[in-house]
Image (cartoon, rainbow, N blue to C red; front, side, top):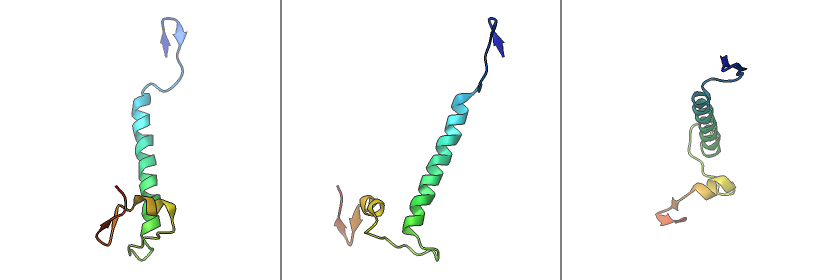
Length: 67
């Protein structure tokens, strides 16, 4: 594309590309988190030894673990 005698090279709609990348990144993060808490058989398994799982758990057994 040439504007005012200058040739412009690059993406013409960068905001449209960012949204797709952000959505894909969020989906991948969510998928990876679910792999931590769901077994291959589909059962919920909370491994409290996993730092990520432990940090995300807000309540357990009727008690508030994190405020």
